[in-house]
Length: 109
Image 1: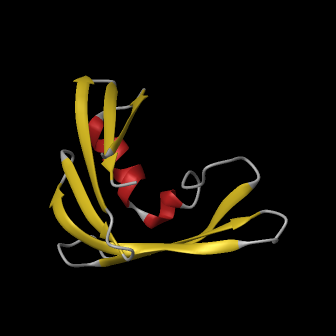
Image 2 (image 1 turned 45 degrees about the vertical axis):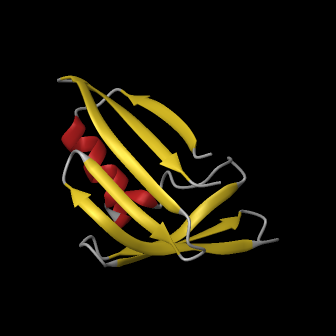
């Protein structure tokens, strides 16, 4: 059964899309805890394009590459990708009004 999460962001959908998909911004938010960081992010945001984000513990005790390929890209609406371990991820960007966006993520466990 897929896992679903939602985050409500106080920003318009175009800005949320930009921060979610642009490696320049990804390094500032793409980590699960405050004692981790995203040390580098690269992506080719086209269908079939690859991405790789390196996540590491700030104390340098461990790290890993989060990588895969984009399968669907609909700017400001829908992003899908397949991870290198064959899990699928769907991300929906749902404008709530001019200044708020719901980001709904569904992924294989």
